[in-house]
Length: 190
Image 1 (cartoon, rainbow, N blue to C red):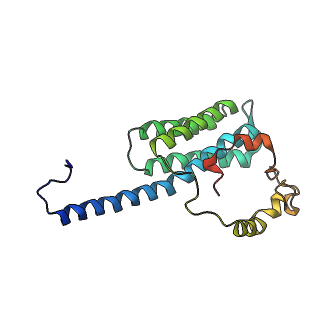
Image 2: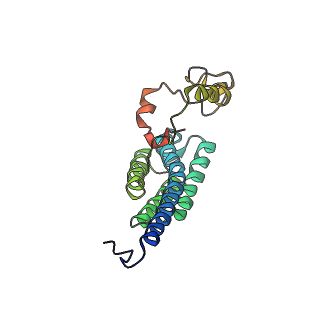
Image 3: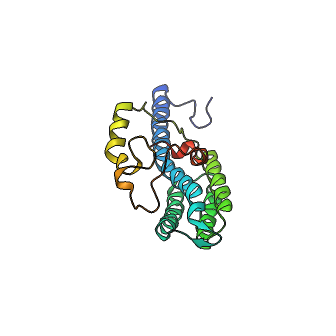
């Protein structure tokens, strides 16, 4: 007996109601996944990169700092648009705190801890799969990397591509174990 669907309804109508609800729920979950993954990526980016560009209350790279301020505002806006859940208000408060902490040039460790907590809370409130929906094709990935990334990051991903000369900040060396250990699976899905 389902309290939401009265037993006196014809079986076909009950089946139709369940189907419609299932389609609606899967649509909401799919939309949520597509909405949540970019938020996770931005939160991760800030948590990993902020300490490099803001130290002792001083901005070391104005362009990167401006981007992090922009991303923190975008995180808050995107959270506003997510479906309502019990912990949504706390997520929005955390996003507001992230914005304010970046604006006051807070300590990098504080930002790292705040973004780690935000990631954990976001995944608790909006559980989504972090694995690709479809198995990636390595040949397509390699081609995309060569076309869109190798110019700066180099053929082997060491940040030494021909276009890397003079870039500030320098392109990421994907072989840097320290940096790699700070990344979260949610942000490395691209």
